[in-house]
Image (tube, rainbow, N blue to C red):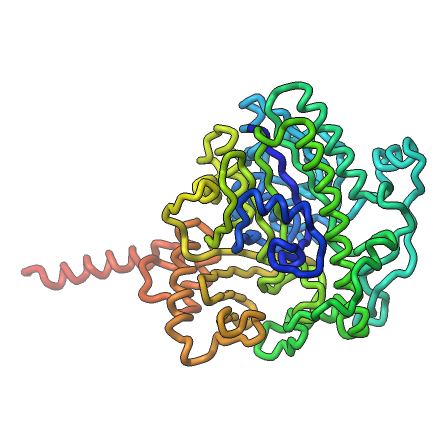
Length: 501
């Protein structure tokens, strides 16, 4: 079974037609969903690029693989996986797979994709590396113009400086865009792998639609901003929320940008999604032409979502909202019927699924669960809740989250905790953690999160032991034997007093 893995970066699930968007043209991803399994509740294990990608590579939760931050904003965490960490490509290689990864790596500093056995140009970092020699050679070979932008969109930071670049016009034809280049390189690899005849795993990791949105006029102006319905959570006041969210809003300059510019930014983001969909269509079409469709399983997902103005934020960060944690997830396995599933599944589950399809042992992917039973239409026992975690970006900021069908609990040790009723408040505007009527829900979710973290071996639970309502203690939270030894001494003294003279 060949494996084609298509991945975007910072991609909102609600920008796809197959997930209900009535305006954005995504015909290629829509047809993939119509012929495969679309997961309606597909989540990232953490809404930050490098840790999420490391979870995909290892099948481990971030706290376990310990690659916890993007290196560009690292504040002391590891910058590469440990040498002894399990990764799925090593298992596939043992099964004779050809391995290719075209596009964004962002999985470490001293070890690149080739270190794990992948073919393809080395493309590090978080944004399109438009000065990369292979991209420049691609342009020159085809007589295409170099990268150039104008009409830059940015706000003003709290100290009066220019904010991060959010969008700009790109003065190149579509054939010269980095997205077209990536699809071309992916097709070239697929053709070579098909000629070889051995099974292959080929990943194409687009850098977009991550900001800044740098698009040719055709896509920059593709969607009329009047079509854009602003996210309801743009009404965010941050009342009763962790103060860091208000700080992040200022960092991303939301209030310094006119609302009509925010609307335009969302329209441009949509254009970016359509550009990438077209490039994915080129890859899928070539797969069909090569006669590989009946022997190739196809995945599509993203590393995490994007705010695009929701909660008065851009990018992602220390706020565990659905906008950045719920992501698209589509898997098409030849011979399986199209369907929609509503189980809670995660990006990390792709690891065991890849291994399963390749006939490998899924055991080493310890925090991953194969999705093949769901893809086959079966109804196995499945967890009724989802866990996620965050460790910081720009600065350390630990969070843990649990959500079930209706409620979401977020533990923020340095601040206020959060509890959202996703049925009554789907846009997560009202933090109900302190609401008396939800005390039973709060206790239930806190205890369930506590138990699951302990089962996983995530030491975050030690903070929860003395701080929250988790019931009677069943271990010594000091992790020492002092009290136990003291109890023994006390028992001995008592025995002496009770013994006959």
